[in-house]
Amino acid sequence: MADVRELTYGEAVKEAIAEEMRRDPRVFLIGEDVAEAGHPFKTLVGLVQEFGTERVIDTPISEPGYAGIGVGAAMTGMRPIVDVMFGDFITLTMDQMVNQAAKAHYMSGGKIKVPIVFRTTLGATRRSAAQHSQSLHAWVSHVPGLKVALPSGPYEAKGLMKTAIRDDSPVVIFEDKMMYRVKGPVPAEDYTIPFGVAEIKREGRDVTIVATSSMVQVALAAAAMLEEIGVDAEVVDPRTTWPLDEKTLIESVRKTSRCIVIDEGYFRYGVTGEIASVIAEGAFYDLDGPVRRIGARHVPVPFSPPLEDATVPNEHDVFAMARAMCRK
Image 1 (cartoon, helix red, strand yellow):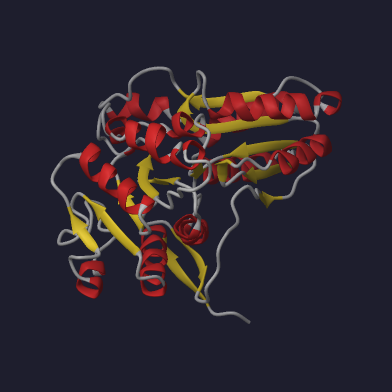
Image 2 (cartoon, one colour; image 1 turned 60 degrees about the horizontal axis):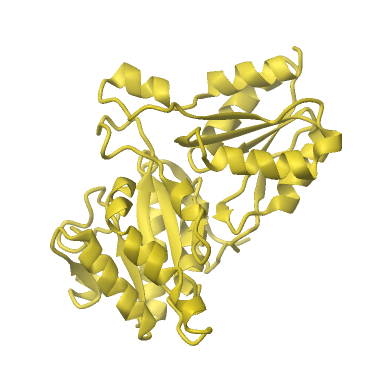
């Protein structure tokens, strides 16, 4: 049997980056507080001691500047990991991501590749207020030329990061900042998780719950509650919002005939709407009712803890919705 350890989500991310830096000398890490401080969330502690300041590079507080350095390095043969401390700060890197990295391959007739990873975060309930708590992954999922990954646990955090670093396309990977201390089994041997392949986290027959990132844990908790009242929920983790595994989502809903989509991004014009549309079109004649959605409330994330908690989907919301859909 393969050697499997219990690692935290944060340890899994660091292990993936370290292994890829050892494997490929073109891989380097650049961002704010990534070297001596080991990142504000302490997920990179020890990397600068192993690889030195030429490959783990602290930058000034200028997201547009170091994102541009990363894009240029990728275009000229390196494989940079650009660390954007909070997902909210991709507002400052959008030109480099959306107009440069995403389009260079197309605008050069395929002659230029941009193998870059933008590593950033999502997720609220950390009491960090409105400018450090948003989940903005839908923005970049909207842009052709970018791939977008959302690890839901330590196993996915390592496997998706390694895939992202090896990919010749620009990838944006969003880690839920509230999950860095969550533990889970991670194989010791080298492995990757292919993009565009969803995982069924729990088999079920009565209702499909499609959930992203930390919402997978919310969905599994709701499924356990539903089991107690005789509702058998299937939980599906897309793992990447682009490419999106439409086939697995549609097949699951054809089996269960009911679907709830949960995502921590804003409800309006968000990931839940896109996934619900895919399912509504692909499984229309198998549905017993409309695809239902749960997302973050359409307000800036409050600093007040009770108000902040009210903006994020939870297992009780999912339980109540699924129970009503299954008429239990």
